Image 1 (cartoon, one colour):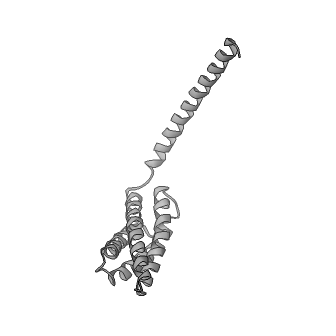
Image 2 (cartoon, helix red, strand yellow; image 1 turned 180 degrees about the horizontal axis):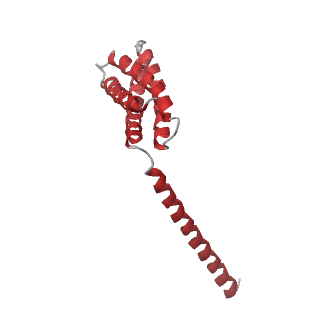
Image 3 (tube, helix red, strand yellow; image 1 turned 135 degrees about the vertical axis):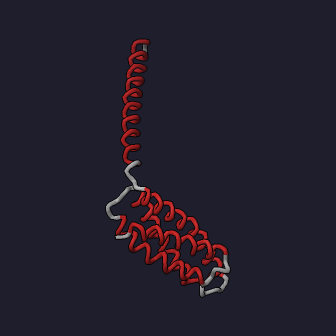
Length: 148
């Protein structure tokens, strides 16, 4: 490779980098505008769903550990938490995307959150279950504000 080929190759790479940077900046600008479209109610639901996910994972793990030691009554708690985890993951995503389907899913999630809260209350002597139940109650209230 001679100096001319090296110079032309370097110029081509620099040009590609400039074009890539310009496109990235344009994309970043577009994304920031979409982020501002989400309502404060959607952000509150997304935060509540996120909290449910975090506390639900801890509760589910706790239920499974106890179930493995022979406490079969933890099965109902584990089942309700597992359903909340599935719904709250979707709820969080739709809220963050400002989806037109959010209100419909919030209505379904409310039912699951209430059932999970009621189930967790049976085991509120366990910190993980108590925290999960409280988180589900908070998510229920946020869903109620936007449910169709």
